[in-house]
Image 1: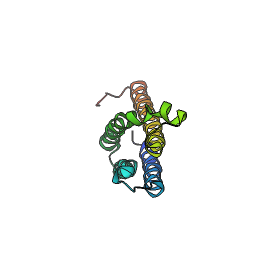
Image 2: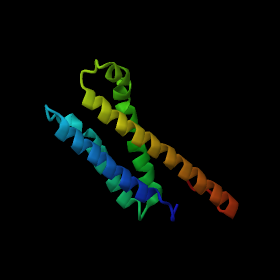
Image 3: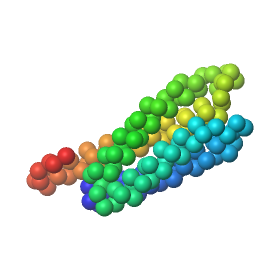
Image 4: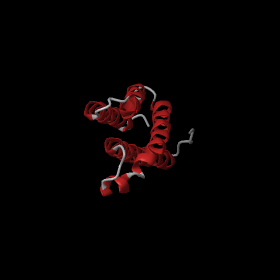
Length: 132
């Protein structure tokens, strides 16, 4: 995975999540720290992406674990979309922010899995042994 674009993608995703968290925090009337959860996830992912430039095998795997846990954590907000559409959501901003975070993280996990599959196929085609 030496020429992988995943470290760059990870940094971009981290930056987007930081923006989602900061905007959610600033737009919230109560300014709850929980509005910053996407930003916290984004910061961790951005660090993984930067470190992944030198050792992608380790750091992109770590980033994907963080993304998967983050997606599972935001699933509850996604389930509130029906209430949001009906105008009955208790915390509409949390539902919106959580849904955006969920979509970004799931998309990242899909890209990461596809990247790993492509690397394994390339190694097989090149006759190299699999080490991960």
